[in-house]
Amino acid sequence: MAITAGAAAGCALPDQNQPGAARAADDAHHQAWEMASTIRKQTIVPVFPDKSFPITDFGAVADGKTDASDAFAKAIAACHNAGGGKVIVPAGRFLTGPIHLKSNVNLHLHDDAHILFITDPKAYLPPVLTRWEGVELMGYSPLIYAHGEKNIAVTGKGKLDGQGDRQTWWPWKGGRWQGGTDWSVDGVPTQDDGRDKLFADAENGVPVEQRIYAEGAYLRPPFFQPYSCENVLIEDVTITGAPFWLINPVLCQSVTVRRVTCASLGPNSDGCDPESCKNVIIEDCFFDTGDDCIAIKSGRNADGRRLNVPAENIVISGCKMRTGHGGVVIGSEISGGARNIFVENCEFNSPKLLRGIRFKTNSIRGGLIENIYYRNIEIGEVQNALVIDFHYEEGDAGKFDPIVRNIEIRDLICHKAKRVFQVRGFERAPIKNLRLINATFESVEEVGDLEHVDNFEAKNVTIAGKPFSV
Image (cartoon, rainbow, N blue to C red; front, side):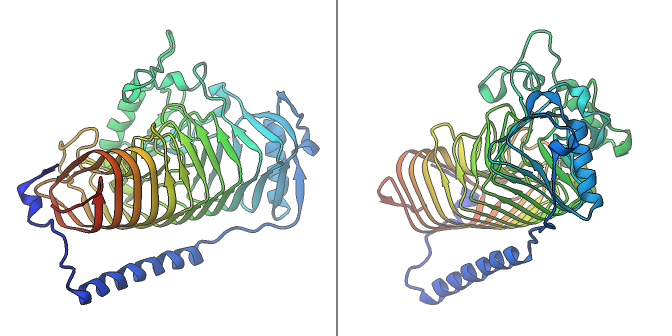
């Protein structure tokens, strides 16, 4: 394990003969988790009038071939105009383009309902205000979208299938991604030029309404993106075949994600990415994804700093993570900051899960990340257990040093990991107040690295059967 000289001064086991200090730490722990209870109470779960609007009453045909876009739009409009209720998707297979929700509408899927989304990009025009990798633009409509609405939901045990595969959206990613699958298809353009131009526009302050990146830019749309909405619920559904990120609420207040299965192994298939949202509950969900399972975000670089809205007051509980680049992640689009994040009773377990607990930023992203708490975490198998990386992607190439402080991980067991730590701050901007309490790492190939951490506390920590100290 590498410990830099600057970090070592702040890294030591606390004095076990100081009961007053221990009590103070326990009191702070309980006080922090009381805030998690408050967040739950503050997060409003929408309720809907007892009215039903079956899409089949508006012309939808359950054959998986007939375009039901118009039927969905008419049913949603009728439900909204009547004061709200449920738009019912009955058993069967329904093909549609983008679904735009309106206030007081619950899109409810029968257990055997299967919504198939059209893969022709032209169906997702005209462009709408959206956010793509943390940057605002006018882009393809998300598959399910709402802007400025209140009390909206997608519920039921049916399936939402974006039909993303090697013949439709996924080849736009292009190239060999993260050393794995090559998504390129001969003759199919990729997102590279559009992505670079969008990011340059954002850095140069081009007005959002002039950032038109739909046809010809090849930027894949998110699956479910409520934008600037209040009181959002997504519950029980299964999402698969996503073109891009699966659940991506942006600038929303009161978001509940409950018992959702995110099963999509395509490129950038993040499971749930609340971005610049306040009061978010993610509970009892299952993730088997092609990228991060859960990633907390708040905008990229200049665009994130322009909006300057943090991700805050988020509780993640009872979730299971399988394949993915990270289990619970903060970043990398984190320029607006993140605070008051609580993660409990979660299970990470897959030889294909690259990281368990992950923070990713750099000196171009920046961001203030603080008050992050984990408890009762079980890691079955993972490659890297704890990653806090200030050198993500572009590395140390900017002038916006991240501030990462006050992280507590308590009551964690990891059965198998290649590496315990990959924790790297900057010498000029160290990670501060990292506490690891009651943690066991059983089978470990290497301890890993701790670089530039001030005030690191390890209490009741064992690695490969030996007490851990630095």
